[in-house]
Length: 393
Ligand SMILES: Cc1cc2nc3c(=O)[nH]c(=O)nc-3n(C[C@H](O)[C@H](O)[C@H](O)COP(=O)(O)OP(=O)(O)OC[C@H]3O[C@@H](n4cnc5c(N)ncnc54)[C@H](O)[C@@H]3O)c2cc1C
Image (cartoon, rainbow, N blue to C red; front, side, top):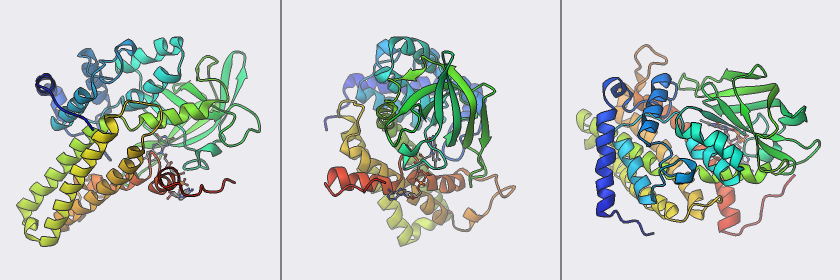
């Protein structure tokens, strides 16, 4: 790992911090710390305006190459950008699925026309995306996808159901993994198709989560249509494109995520100081363990990110997903124990919760999305330790 911040980088850090200070103000000030875990629904329209404000100053897609409309920042400067963003209390980004997942996928696997059509509105913060992979019988076993698409008069016609689709209620487009070859099985015969969400063939139904809010949805495709050209990669070769998208999910923004974790841990430590829980040796020990865990995660993340970007996951990425998700889940429990009896009190119960209560409830999902921890362990067993593969049905 070779990650040193030069003088130029430190100047850049001040530029980002100053921009955040002067722009996350006025009507945007209310966005500080909002839109995070369990709070994704809040202030959406204003956060969308914020995305466009960032775009005006070229602070979206900072790691994308310049030819794709990005800022072409070095890894070091991307790390700085995301850290300063989180340090200033920058809100959850409404454009993160476009910027972090489908944009890099189109850049890597798409053709020139697709890049011209789809990348600029992501950079401008204008078009929002959602990810149409999971189905009622295809989650960990993603190759079991049943949603179908067929060509009819120069258009793909899509029928089927996706589920757990985050932010589908706000999305303009969805990248849909679907079966385009009749009777094909497993990874073969799948395609990666870009589908406009605002059409009569699509129904979005919110799923209530235990936070009392609905970050994800069921999405029904009932004769939904999209142009024949809106396929990334060749028909039947969608699996490798879909896996490419998952590899991009690791992104440099994970460092910003850690700054966010640091903010959460600091808030918990502050509460422990105020309510005297910091005198309890068991709580002290857990707070120290959390702090050590955060340092170890940062080292692993920097090691992972200092490798050149590639459409395949480095080994560190598998360890990383497991370690941060368990750490974050445990932080939620620690927060409740530090709050003590206050953890059980909500204003306007059941659902007007404090940010730590929302955190506690939402982090249960961290060990599930982007590949469950059991699946990550299977992959580590097979790829890192060379153990036998699970038999396929
Ligand atoms: C907050 C949140 C947001 C999400 N957003 C999206 C989204 O935007 N788009 C999208 O497409 N999906 C999304 N998902 C879905 C997510 O990708 C799936 O939940 C995940 O892949 C697991 O699939 P599943 O829920 O069908 O569980 P299953 O695959 O049915 O798994 C159930 C349990 O069995 C275990 N299991 C399954 N197979 C094995 C195995 N082979 N070995 C050992 N254990 C196994 C799992 O680890 C899990 O504990 C989201 C999920 C969450 C929680």
